[in-house]
Length: 117
Length: 111
Image (tube, rainbow over all chains, first blue to last red; front, top):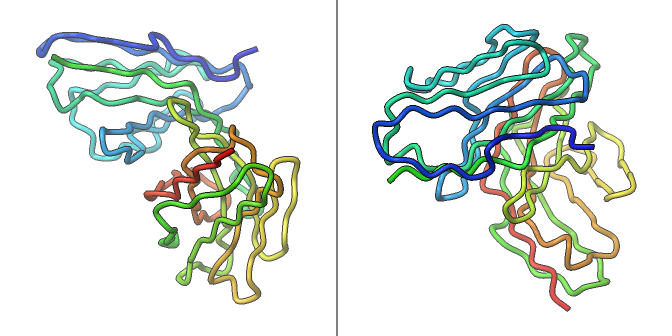
């Protein structure tokens, strides 16, 4: 059973196109994330959603629009793709607790490799 | 979250223990040390975390110094499949916290 799944695994597209990446988790978690890993392998958070509400938005261009139809899904739509958007995009999920003692582990999907030509 | 410093790369022979150090001299009192790893072309994978005491699970052991300024992740019997980039991350518990990944340590396990 795949805990966090992403589709597609590979995405090759032309500059200026609009594309979406889908993410689903079957762990019953209430929080989901999108991370971007660039060509230099730096892994950086883009967005976080908790119970379908945006919690973290890390100064990502507004061409990127996450959408969470329910707790188990967090999709990423990218408008007007640019060469610099080429990267691996990882979805993750966790169960967030607000208690000071709560520990939280994030579970990552396999990644979507986006190449913009 | 504390800034962490790790060696860029390390080598280990298969079957030997791999000891991966991490410096986190600015860690705060309630900040945990987390370790994740990323095997080539895969998503990051949680390994272990700790606050003060040494911790052990089925994957690894975590040794945290008494002053909490550094820690060591130990893979007791490294296998070829342990070749990966290992990230040490400082994190305050609770709330909506993001994981801040540094550059990590690239561990190469050789036959």
